[in-house]
Length: 406
Image (cartoon, rainbow, N blue to C red; front, side):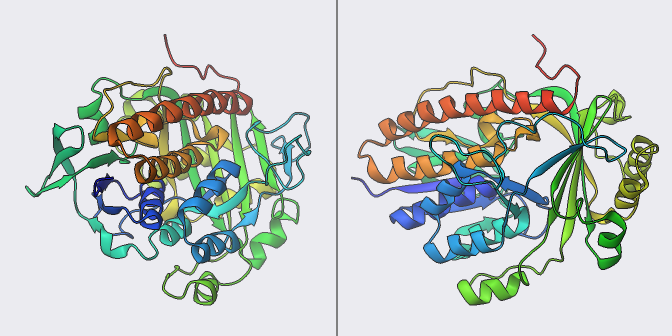
């Protein structure tokens, strides 16, 4: 098999998981990220890692880093469904969620783990820092043959690889050239994300149930997901014990929350999107209006939120069948090819699954074009299934039209 070099554009979870998998297999790689530094942009808060995501990480990470990932997470707790008065209501959460109390399936799968997204990214950077290049934005690529591609960045530099992988997210520059006209659709929904630090005062005012279980609060046409993030010990101390070369940022316990619903119901006009995210003052006012008649404990939770981390994102989704292109030395993974609603908790997990499959294909198959084609066929299959499950999750969270316009 020829000596291969893989250039990965995008240092998100999927791109870094692929890099770790290639490192494990002894395949040369470099990662190029447009952000100027690892810490230059917020990386989000809680993320659910399901059985597929856990398996992908176990395949790609060295054993000590995978153990570090496990020990910086908590098992997804039981889920309580509530109305705004904190009264239990019938129903079930998204079908894709698996908690530590979920009914056993014929082939039991592990419960989801709740990870802090930035912590997971720091773990995925462990040991490959010298192969990750920040401040590098993809401008274009030129395909020379089935196993050679030239890549140009905005700073004018070029590199040559046997494979270019676009892992550069929902606004992927790689996708725009490889599969033009396949941008993900605006679903008409949006998410407002925030967190509240779980101080002793906050925990006392909220009560034990909200600080222990995952809660989904349903209102008219929108919902809020609330998930406590409590760490077993200081994150840097866990890293020092299990993987001393991996540095984890300290983080206090917090309660993650996310509003999801149609943007009109959330008080956002079409004129406010696309532009930039409304400022914190505007987002705070929106949240106050949405929960003005909610239980006082819930209003306290949002009123004590960390304003510096408050953000809003439109929900965009790929439309099955997913884009096709001629298999060759350029491919895509994650949101670059199959963006989906966060309601099912499947987007990042599908990206991790992509990464593990692509790392295995590239490192084990002699014919690169055949390896990439094999990966792309499998990826489209599970991604289209995940997109449909995510749309089901969205429908379970709010009673508005969540399908894409025809």
